[in-house]
Image (spheres, rainbow, N blue to C red):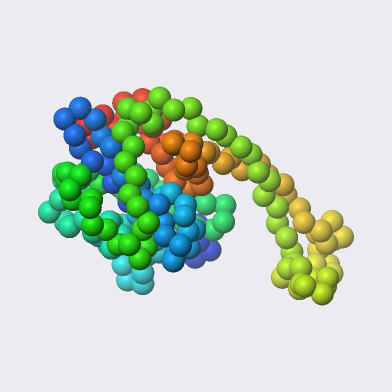
Length: 210
């Protein structure tokens, strides 16, 4: 059995991808975050940190209920899609929920965390071509202070690691996917999740959800 080592290095997060079932399609339910929360004004799926003693699934269900106010009886299916590892140190557990709801059920949501809800048909997003950008990731052995000095996080000279590590190293490319929907960018982890789900649907792996 394969085991993912070093899990203690990662921050566990759960994300729920709500899909509304209609007669001929599935519709992504996303939210635009309010100005009161982290990543304000960005578009995302319900999600957040896994609390102590909480399973990833329980956290995903909790976030769906807290943010979109969807009760358990409205959930037709709740399935684990997979795990996404973020280069920023997050271990993201991704779940898909099939919701049996109408638009009237979406008239009330947690306005402290959510500015508004966004519905995107699966057929429509499968036709979209996302933009792809590649940023550089580097490892910094220090924090730069306001006075121009460095706070060494890794004491390179003391440990005699070599002069090459006195400056940032690495520079690996990291893909950033952006979907532009009605002038709104959907990107970051949300863009990655949508991209992977679309790939799986096109290959027929998720057809059982219809």
